[in-house]
Structure formats: C-alpha cells, structure tokens
Image (cartoon, rainbow, N blue to C red; front, top):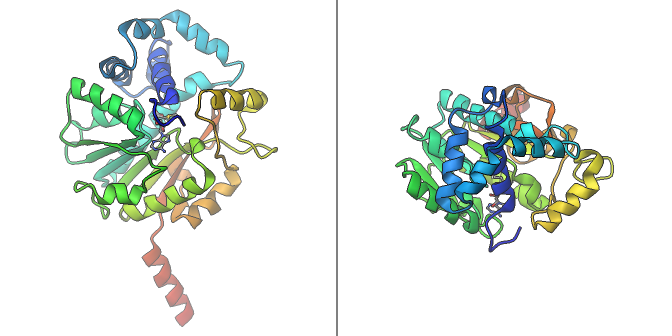
Length: 300
Ligand SMILES: C[S@@+](CC[C@H](N)C(=O)[O-])C[C@H]1O[C@@H](n2cnc3c(N)ncnc32)[C@H](O)[C@@H]1O
C-alpha cells in the first residue's frame, strides 16, 4: 500500500458502513451504534466533510452501491455481516474470559471505541499503518478518549508485531485475547501473513482466538473475486492496495496448524461466502498439552 497516505480501502469500508445505515433492513445486522460512530469518526478525523456523510447516507448512494453489486454480488451488504461477525467474536471471547482485544489493520473501525466503556475491565488495542492511525487518533481525540483503548501507529511490514506489543507496557502476552484481522490479510505478502499468524500465537495467552476474513484462491491461482476478478485486481492495484494473498478454504486448516492455531469452524458460525470473502476463527493451540499427549503416547 501507499505508505505516506491514509488507506483508501479503510475509508471505503467506513463510507460503505454509513451507506448501509440508510438501507432498509440493515439495522438487523449492523452492530448497534456503528453507523453514528463511524460518521462521527470520519468527520472528526478530517477524513471527510459533513457533505460527504450526507451524500453517503442518501438513498441515491444506496442505489449506487446496489448497482455495483453486478460486479461483486453481495459485496455491499457483506460489510454489515463482516462487522457483525467481528463484534460477535469479540463479545463471545469476552464472555469466555478474554481481557484483551487486538484489532490489526483497524482502519476507521469503531468497535474498540464503542465497546471500551461497556467492558471497562478489558483492554482494547488497535494497530494500523501510521498514515491511517494518526488520522484516526485525531478523530478519537475529538470524540472522547477511552482509558482502556490504545491506538498504536505502526507499519507491520517494517516492525514485528511481537516487538510492537512487547514494548507496550499495557500489553499482557499471557492474557486470553481476541485478535481481529478484518479485511487485512489479502493486502500482505504470503510470507508476512504466515509470520503474522505465528506472531499472534506468541503474543496471546491460552484460550485466545483469532477471527479474520480472507479471499479464496481461484482455479487460476489468483485471489478469486468472481466473474470480474481481472478487473477487480486491476482496480485494487490502481488505488495502490492490491490483493496479494489468498488461500483455498480446504488449505486453511493445515495453514493454521503450521502457524500455532486450530481452525474452529464451530466458532465461526458460517461457512458461506459473504461478497468476496470467507470468515474464519481459529483458537490458539495448546502446545504444552500436545507435547504432554505425545510423551504419554510414547510411554504406552
Ligand atoms: C481494507 S482496510 C480494513 C480496515 C478495517 N479492518 C475495516 O475492515 O474496517 C485494511 C487496513 O489495513 C491496514 N494495513 C495494511 N497494511 C498494513 C501494515 N503493513 N501495517 C499496519 N496496517 C496495515 C490499512 O492501513 C487499512 O487500514
């Protein structure tokens, strides 16, 4: 991605959320308060003006997004399902005892800001590329800081996640954690994705989960965006944020196992495709437990 400019795709996701707020029936899926918080954040950060928000809220804009669904069927509404999926993972994880939430490549996502007061004993961390994170920090500053929300500006392509979090005194690597990587991994090189999952397993405690979305690999080996894949890949390149990682759903379990995670299909609660993406959840493998099991088997 273009390192010096705020992310265009993060901006697009946020505006899409605002327009979804104007589409009838979407309130059944969108997390409560997300539309209003996103509007506030976009304006307070200076990412857009009030006029753009008014335009994004209009029925005309709903029709524009719906018209673009010919290219990526279901993609407009998919952002509502994606946001709901991530928030459900965080709420379920907290219900099971997670005390730390980490959102990677957070963009203009407002989950941390919205949930931090409700879960005052949970620490929320967000990491994004400095160009985007700084703009967001300005917005959060204006909207009202949260004591338990930590915004970290880092390029994860330049500095390792392990180092970033180890140098943050509020981070507890033994804590049960929910990690969210929403709309992120397709923008990272293959070796960086593998490394990121390995590092996530190191920085989070027993019982942690990672929830993420991914684009499947097509028969031709490219990320599969359906009929208009070629055009989509070209457009992503032009805006400077190309899709460079994808995986076949059947290859996901072995990939996760190699990086310290176990695919948790039951936790994901969905196996279908939403727009161009699949949603997945994995739980941190208990290596100690596995080692002990192997030793016991050898003794038998
Ligand atoms: C498609 S946006 C998704 C934003 C957010 N997760 C959402 O769904 O609303 C991808 C985000 O990943 C961030 N990102 C991409 N490469 C990154 C890197 N190397 N380090 C940190 N953040 C990165 C971008 O800045 C952008 O905010």
